[in-house]
Amino acid sequence: MESELGKKIIYQIYPRSFYDSDHDGIGDLRGIIAKVPYLKKLHIDMIWFNPFFVSPQKDNGYDIADYYQIDSRFGTMADFEELVAELHKNKIDVMLDMVFNHCSTRHPWFQKALAGDKYYQRFFYLRSAKPDGSLPTNWQSKFGGPAWSRFGHTDKYYLHLYAPAQADLDWHNPAVRQEAAKIVNFWRKKGVKGFRFDVFNVTGKAEQLVDSTDRNTEKQLYTDTPVVHRYLRELNHNSFGQDPTIVTVGEMSSTTVENSIKYTQPKNHELSMIFTFHHLKVDYRQGNKWDSVPFDFLQLKKLLFEWQTALDQAQGWNALFWNNHDQPRALNRFGDPIHYREKSAEVLATAIQLLRGTPFIYQGEEIGMTDPNYQQITDYEDIETINAYHELLAAGRTPTQAFNAVKQKSRDNSRTPMQWTDDKFAGFSTVKPWLLPTNQATINVADELKNGEIFTYYQRLFKLRKTEKLVYQGHIKPLWQDHPQVMGYLRYLDQQQLLVITNFYGQATTINLPAAFAAAKSQILLSNYQRQQLPTNKLTLAPFEALVLKLNSSSFF
Ligand code: NOJ
Ligand code: MG
Image 1 (cartoon, rainbow, N blue to C red):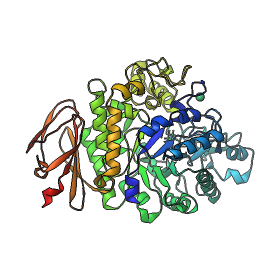
Image 2: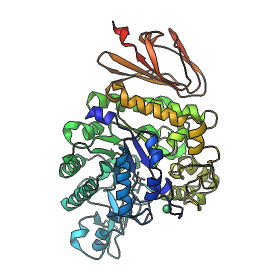
Image 3: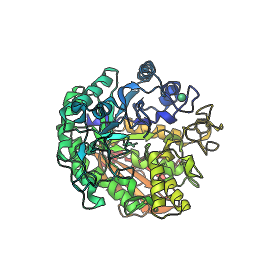
């Protein structure tokens, strides 16, 4: 199974921003069907779709009001079925996003609870104010403000770790867990082969909800509690675990190495793999997302390798990624989109994709898309961005400071429409899209396929992953851990070794090539500079150079 997971490439589509077929400025399912030939070119195995279920869209579909229906903005169930069939014809499977920590306050469960139905009231965390009249706990919502809102006209409050429109479901209630399994099984019957579980490790709050003593440790009160593992095993048993070919990934916010192992060790029957985010916080000042600093390269490597080596030793499994719909483009954060857009995109791709695990790539990454250059707060749509902007102002930042802070980290950075052409609306739509593209004149699919090198580089990387056992199955050993510019590692299995070397900066740098790999002893499998030859010892890497070497088998004898 491990080798099967290691051969898969998963592409993420943000349906709202992929392709608009019905001219309303919002991407849709028929738009995705129209682009299947493009997706086929990439040789991906599965597509993870962000939620397109019925939703008031307060958090772009992460506030679900009906888990069994397609939101009419995106299409119909018939469109969905056609999309699945079309993808299957091209050997691409479908992964859906299961949002089970919370549902929309428009969901009938919440509405019935509000109307006084006791059965459904037990679906949520309803609590009374403290004797002094203050909120049930002092917890903060992850989108700003308190995590409790008044439950209708009652004297109770309901918990929402995210927006007030996203009410947390009480997983301690077996009826909630049964509903979740039912939803997974419904989509399995439609041919869905993959499931991503949204913020799953915060589902199991402690039995007693208590005040936190400090903001930084507050999350521990509801993250990775032992019951999460128990409920996952139950969900696995009652739904996706019944089909061993199904692929699952849990989004694990602020998790630990120990829990990551537990979630993914095959013997535990929890998940195939997990997303972790520590490596994407290395450009936060003291953990504060809205206070950006140049990224800490040594820390980045340390975190990636910590997870890699620990999960390798324990048969855990990582999802490998730089980008998703919640992150600004990695190219802007860790690359150089101005001077070395193509080379730095290739370095990032090489460094992450040849690690041990299953790579995920996010729409537009394969053409080197970058963050938009918005000029005012009204250009943004995202609830987190807007809330953060107002909180920064309230905390005393000037409008310019607050704007610059959110511009760096806004989730809308990656949510801009896929840039198909250099047209006014990037070939995404014929009408003004819900978010505007700003740099489609220089970055777009049409141009990339004609003149670019990133797309073909991704194809080569994917081929390498699928054909080279060292990549899909090998162990990992980090190298040059203290080097200020180079990320490199060995992948090894039995007697074989593969060496990945990447220069993360726009200056050349020289390293000692491990003797075993010197000229004539190894072959170049991949190079983003068409390098043909290797030196015997000192290797000088060009700015943002990526190189993959494999020992000649003859070197062993
Ligand atoms: C994680 C999702 O990726 C994000 O987009 C969403 O806002 C939160 N979970 C809440 O569902
Ligand atoms: Mg549309």
